[in-house]
Image (cartoon, rainbow, N blue to C red; front, side, top):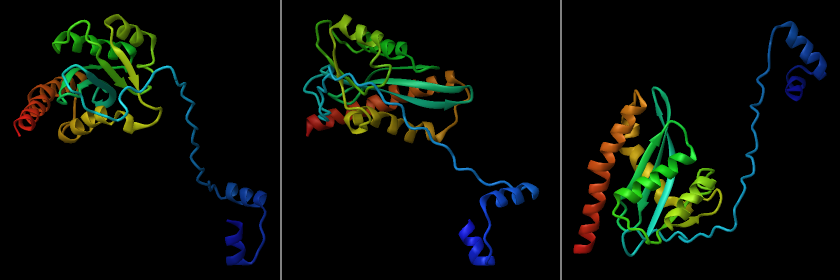
Length: 213
């Protein structure tokens, strides 16, 4: 600013004088927005990546991928957790909550185990990112209880869990961005209808066509 003043007026002004003149004229500068550096995320190196970007499975319930997303409603935020079977791309489970807790992902896993035809003893791989819900003790204990295998991609590498994130991209493109949810209950009902009548049937039909070809 001082260099420009000298070029325009040929005078030298110190910063203190500029501040005094601006204060007298009731002028204020535009401060630079402060940004916070992201806090380091603890990494559990003992958990392997059993799905090195190979988003396919030879049979149902062999490999599931899971993730969380945030949706807006008139009542506030709504969080959605999904479990996707890599065999045919269908969702074997999904749940919504007002908060993104470990209980949300645990209930989604248990719901999927009860509804998907999964049988105890099947060493299903469940692949996720390093979100706090998936590194929680409750989630680890849930997988251990049912004999499920835990897999995680690298930290801050979205491509390692791209198959799960693609579910949210399609949901938001075809439903969320086309409407406004007044309540969390309405949002949950619309999401349930979309997954049951549009998303899953389309995936199943696509799988049949591939097999037929």
